[in-house]
Amino acid sequence: MENKIVVTAKAQNRQALGIMHAYMTMFPNTTLEELREALPNTINPDKGTDEIFIPAEEKGTTANWDGYFKGDGELLTMGDGMQVSVVKMWTKPSLERLVEHAKQYGIKVVPSETNVDDKTKFHIEAINKSSSSETAEVKKQSNNLMKWLLLAGCIVAIILIIWFLVK
Image (tube, rainbow, N blue to C red; front, side, top):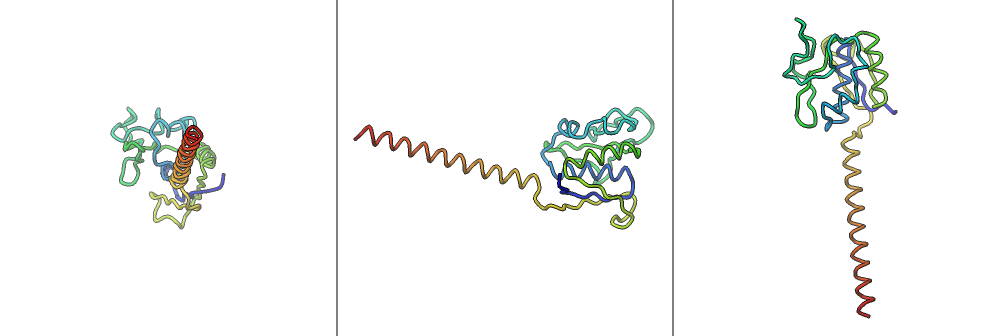
């Protein structure tokens, strides 16, 4: 798939977090269940928790460590408004699986030492300005046009039937 978004980050876990934010930018109406289907737990078997994504109000682990991103700008907002946390633990093999998996959605990851302010940040840049929401709007407009054309065709057919019956 053609790249649509580039994620730039220094740290592995920030690259992963950036991918999640890029995905939500492309598919803003996604629910937690749909996100878990699109980016399954099997991508990150080394996460040290049961789930990659949890509702933000949950701790997600019984261990005595903060295993999920919960800071400002880190939470994902689902299409239904739910706030979701992303697991912090990303080993090199797990990140490589995620980066490869994200390619199918047009997300490219570029590790960087220069494009990001500091190690705790990530940056998302759209390459192709047409987003999935714009595509959905075009499809919606196309569907509306088809409905109007079908309605107009039905009206013409009814008028012709009436005209032949009256004649």
